[in-house]
Amino acid sequence: MLLTDVIRVMTLVRFGVSVPEELLQSFDHIVDKRKYVGRSGAIRDAMRAYISQAEWDSAEGVNTATLNVVYHHTPKLMSDLIKIQHQSGLNVLSSVHVHMTRTHCLEVITMRGTKESIESLADRISGLSGVDYSRLFMFSLPGEVEEGQHHH
Image 1: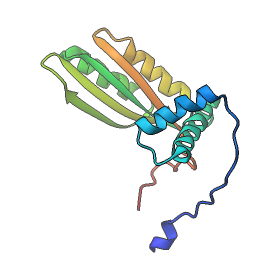
Image 2: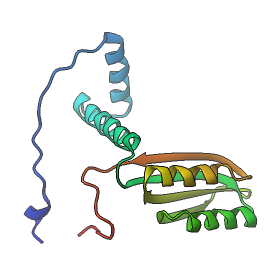
Image 3: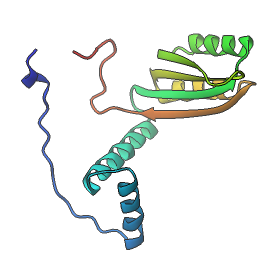
């Protein structure tokens, strides 16, 4: 495969936006804090996040998500986490286990599936006794890759 085969040409379009001054000041503060070169990069990121959330909310097709879970390190809870993942019917892509302290672990579960199946798994895990924190990060990628396709 040639490099020219994987380079996608992106056409940039300029447009104007009218916003209240206070909103722009708050936005510029974030642009500075996050070290963006300018507003354009921050606006592109905000637009991607907005589109991804709208696609997630529409519940169409396959979505991708990670579930971050902080919990008490007990053999029963670890067993329950594994069992729930296997029984979910989701495509669990990976599960990363991190020992945070002597008593707490962090589990990062990456999955693909429908909105309903992802939320169902997240709800089941969040409700387990011993889970202290649980946060779902969901997203839809533009032109989502078909199952089984990998980077070249």
